[in-house]
Image (cartoon, rainbow, N blue to C red; front, side, top):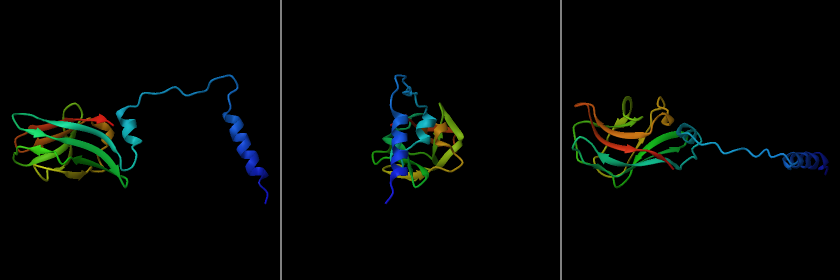
Length: 148
């Protein structure tokens, strides 16, 4: 059993990593939201936020964004509660509601629900989750997202 080439390659790789007096330590770079989303760990929450009601509607609870099996999802937690309105939608926003970023109709006014993010949306472009009424054109709830 000849292991010399493997041993030599390992030794060469280790010697390349040793310090010669000149620091080549990479400096930390502040992560942008897009970079953090792009490098999300599969199955782990990437961003989360807490809802506040808007336009005299009561919206409470938590929301999060996560990735599973190569697909992005928005999750409304079991503590989610919404006072109700006609045809509410779940949507992303970027410092304001984005009509081109509707994820899906809200499936329940109370409790946990999960929504697959359409492939046409890049989650790194957004920093909010909205509950929105298209029929009347008003916001019903807002969760500002923070990276986890």
